[in-house]
Length: 256
Image (cartoon, rainbow, N blue to C red):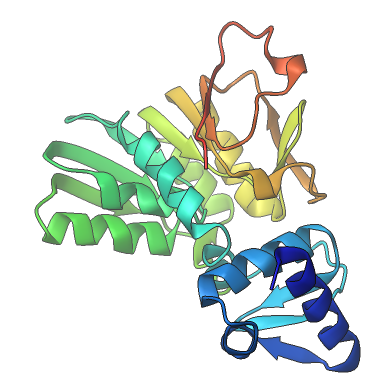
């Protein structure tokens, strides 16, 4: 069955049923679960359905960001490629900060032979990934988990205490994710997390934006910044014409 036929079948099925499972679609349409997940991502981008854990439901509009575990399943292959490229910029002796994101956490998986690294983060899952890199002796150094108010769905820490702790550091590099970006600004869904990310930018010498094309032109609520604080964007999205005149911004487009 061709991709167009699969998409039509999935949309028609959801018109008649409340929920469809990835594995059931894979069996019926005789494709892999990964192919179905890509189909669901495309259909969600076109507002024809809403992805949920294990499958999809009829489209429902929401300004609230999806839970982190669900977001990690979306475009995971390209997110890992972006993270792998970002890892190339981390050197022994660096002090880096990692914000909350489903791409930034993967950076730890691609670090090898990095010594005396200090990692500061407000992401519980990033902390887990970097601790694993420590345990596997792919890196040496220390992981500092920021304190503050916990968000269980996003596995994040934020709030006034977190912001104050960030402001006490000076970082060599900041790796910042986002909920959305366009040719002018970078946004997030959560006000407290966006304030944390903005503070990270203000206390770092070199700033990376780490994002994939699924975030382009979405409509979250809170602006993190324009592109001025950033030195490098690592993504799989073509650089907007409006930003090509910015000589201080390196734009790395990771091809699929």
